[in-house]
Image 1 (tube, rainbow, N blue to C red):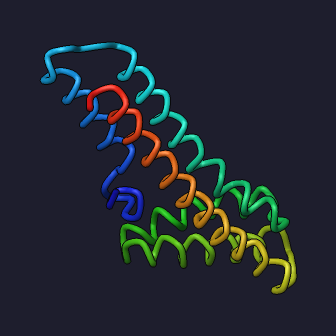
Image 2 (image 1 turned 180 degrees about the horizontal axis):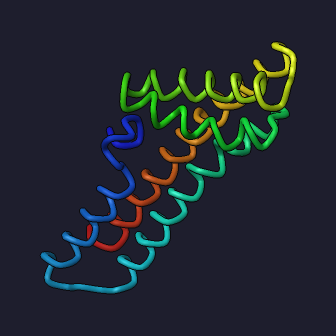
Image 3 (image 1 turned 90 degrees about the horizontal axis):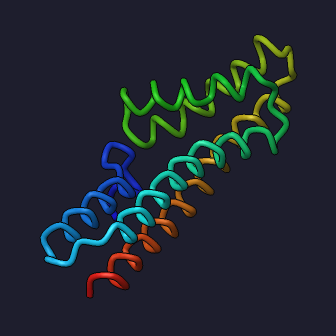
Length: 142
């Protein structure tokens, strides 16, 4: 579960690997849980990207803010961890809107808020998916 909150630890990927290993060592290997867990992992990655983009778009960002916010989030995470990811993603979105889209500070700040909203939604959905993946493992192996 820590991987849901700390992007350096890929939560859904760790659950997928754990499910595959459990399937292999349980003595009753089945492709069905492995495929289901794999699809859920793909869904978690897709949701992660789309939720942040949705948050930025919902708050009125242009393509500049939408494209530069993830770059800022990655840069911020490398420098400052999870707090840096949130702050720098918002800062890059705001700067992109101010510099390239020529928006005023209020509209640009709304784009930055969209980054924070998108990351929050992404984390909530990630938690739900990881818990669901754990449920699949319990259903098949316990």
